[in-house]
Amino acid sequence: MKNLSERGLWVCVVYNLINLVLFATFFKEATIIRGDGPGGFGEAALKGLLLLNALAAFIAGVVSSVVAYRESWSGSRLWRPAVASLVLLLFAVLAVCEACSDGAGHCRHWQIFWS
Image (cartoon, rainbow, N blue to C red; front, side):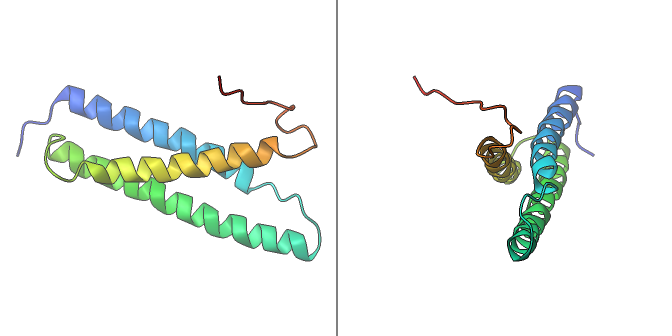
């Protein structure tokens, strides 16, 4: 058994907490269906599929981070947790953009200014 450091454990825990926050951000938006009728069904189906993809990315991130922790965060497999985080980040940004594009005040007219 390799020497599993306490610092590596904290890196793994913090990484998974960040991924959990990203997943929760997307989950909150994915459960809100704004359309009614056929449009609402399509929106629910699309959001359901995206939610399953986000869940798969979250699980893949947890598994790959535990594998990387067991290997003492060294080797060529470190890109796997990063890819899972990037996918979850993409879904979280998509959720925030969708919430802010709604005129019902879900985002309270927040704007992002690039300076």
